[in-house]
Amino acid sequence: MNCQRCNIRKATVHLTKIVNNEKTEAYLCEECARETGQLPFSGGNPFAFQNLLQGILSPELDSFEQYQQKLECDKCGLSYRDFTQKGLFGCANCYDTFSEQIEPIFKRVHGNTLHNGKVPGRRGGTLRIKREIEELREEMQRAVFCEDFEKAAEIRDKIKELEEKEKKQKQG
Amino acid sequence: MGEENKAYSSLSHWISGDGPDSEIVMSSRIRLARNLKDFVYPNIADTESRKKVSEAVKDALTSEDLCLHYIQMSDLPELERELLVEKHLVSPIHAENGTGKDVFIDDKESISIMVNEEDHIRLQVLKPGMQLNKAWEIASEIDDRLEQKLDFAFSERWGYLTACPTNVGTGLRASVMVHLPALNFTNNAAKLLSAVSRLGLAIRGLYGEGSESIGNIYQISNQVTLGHTEMDIIENLNSVTSEIINQEKKAREGLMNDIKVKDRIRRSYGVLRYAYQISSEEAMNLISHVRLGIDMGIINDVDPRVLGELMILIRPAHIQKIHGRELDIVERDIKRAELIQNRLSI
Ligand SMILES: [Zn+2]
Ligand SMILES: [Zn+2]
Image (cartoon, rainbow over all chains, first blue to last red; front, side, top):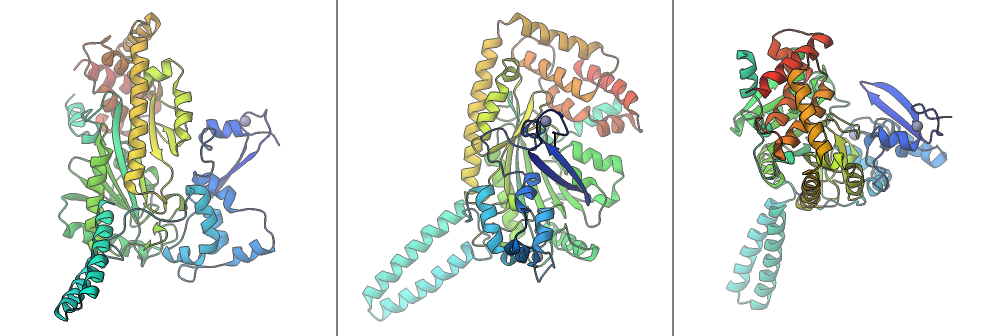
């Protein structure tokens, strides 16, 4: 099949776009795909665009993948198949449901699979660290009171560590 | 003219042409994507769920006293929604029909918070010139305050859980809008930009997805959102942008004695002053030349802010708003030429 845009080169890029629930498909050569902004310039990360994502998310099905496609989020009802077609998660719980499938996707899109940025203060972040520090301080005072200086020193080091961590998270 | 003056004064602060490196960097933008843990995402949410999210975000924002105006998109006529799109305050998708779509905007139109877009919350801060760090500070501060009131979808492993996997982690999209006419004149823009795309950055033209530039204006943004800190992402974009600024400046120096370029610039100016009708694309390309002419000292009687201002004002919804009624394409092209001539003679 020839490219739908230039009609000269072979179509090697299959693009699926969903706008307002309407699916449009295009078969383009690599050059035309690049020119129309569907592919990044050469050498760039070829998996960063959502359009393209659908391409890598919906591979040919073998039996294992058929099993994957049937996976369904029990909170929002989104199936893995729906996800691969839309390129969008339905809720936060989808991440856990599809955790095995999405790790390789993250790896390809971002080159990373672990968050390293800002952490919400209220949940699991600086506030939790603050609380932990407060508790440790109390424990340290108890240790000092009981003249267990070795333990107190240990706790002091722990507090220092946490304070460093807190500082880092604040800087985001 | 009365209406036009009002339109000038109602332009967003980010288009003011101020800020560091404003002769090349038109604006800086920080966008954060956030979702509420207990609600399904907008792409599958029903009306009731969307309304609940809308209420929750509204409560959080109004209690924070951030002096934001609350707008329900469904309350606005189509033209007004289009105006917000042209001002870059809402996305085109957000201007389409749908329940529970809100936007919160501050007086300067620097901050916009879309609710029930692709994610529950899309927080955006726009600043004139090269000010990514400042924009990030403001966005992060608002994010902190929202987070006091709302339970965000977050995991220690993957960070902020966005609707699209391309935003997961930081949920951060940092971008700059740069004007690179000299690099285009010297046929170096494509080369430079392809080098840039190898550094994990995406480049788009002015009005959307295509890489084709209109008016020599490009938007450069980070592609990777997972695995790096926000500061790393911003610093990467900062350093690449300052290199681009250097290259553009060098290219401009090289053009100083180029007669052909001087001629192009003056001819572009002439067309803008005397055309009877003009499309937005042609207008943007010519305005870009005029702005270059101003920066290079070839044109001395025009305000350098015209590029940014006209970029917004010559778009269809703005032309129709200024004119007070709907206009067909031919009428718009005529009114656009008029508007440009009026602005150039201020
Ligand atoms: Zn082609
Ligand atoms: Zn789900």
